[in-house]
Image 1 (tube, rainbow, N blue to C red):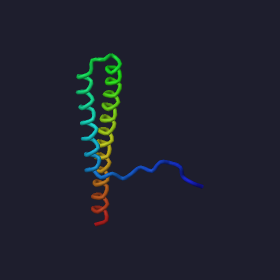
Image 2: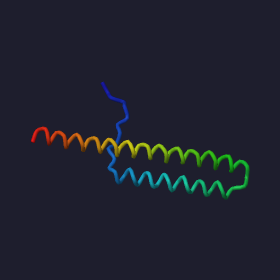
Image 3: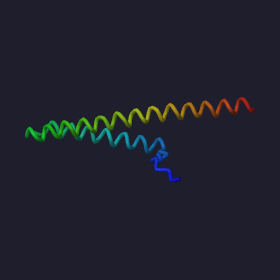
Image 4: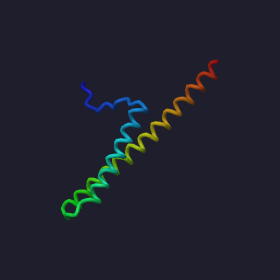
Length: 86
């Protein structure tokens, strides 16, 4: 049977930080765009786009924190395994 589940890529911490920085820049750029538009239709679009970028940044920030916590727990587990067996 074929597995259709999406496989998650194993990102390094540096890649995750780069994505987080990029998302933050994107969010700030869209805030600047929002502040520069005057047409009501563009204001609506700018708000929607800015909020979407903000949510993306928050999501990636949470993912980064979870990844850091998971990595710390894995390191603790490895240290315990060494001390128990050694």
